[in-house]
Length: 211
Image (cartoon, rainbow, N blue to C red; front, side, top):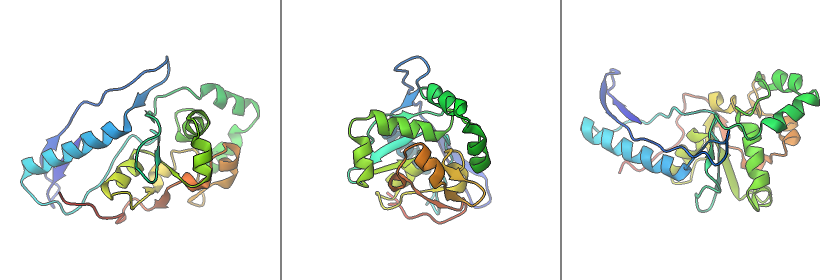
C-alpha cells in the first residue's frame, strides 16, 4: 500500500495491491520478496499519479519481523521472505529455553525468546539455503526486515540500513546500548557481515530515482 500526503498531513491518494501468501508446510508462512518490491513500487507510482504531485520525501512502515536474505551483488533474494507469523523455528526456540537462555535474551533485547522475531528465522535461512552460510561469511549476503529490503531497492543497492525500532524486533539488538549484540550473534551463529546499519527513525537514509 502507498499513501500520499501533502505538507499539512492531508491524505491525497491511496493505492494498494493484494500480496499472496505461501504456506509450504503447516506453520510456515512466506512472501515473495521480489513481489513485495514490485507491488510496492507499482502502488507508489499509482498513488503519486492519482495525487498529481511531486514527491518531496518517502517514509516506510512495515511488518517488522519479516525476514529477507539477499545477494549484495545482484539484489536477488535467496529464498522467499519468512513472515512474522512463521513458526518453523519453534522447536529451536524451545531448545534455547530449556538451556536457560531466555532470561539473558530478555535482558539484552527486552523480548521473549520466540520464533515470532527475526533472529531464528535468519539462522534458519543461513542453515537451510544451500551455500548461504558460506556466502554470508564472505560478505556476499545482506539481511533485513522489509524496511531494509525496500530501502535497498529504492536506493539501487547503495544503502543497507534499518532504524532502531525495526532492529529492536530482531532479537539480535541490544536495546540498552543501541547496538547489534555480539553475544546473541554468536549464540545464533549469525555473522555481523549480513547486518544493516542501524540509524534513527527520523533520518535521511538516501535518495531514489523520482521516476
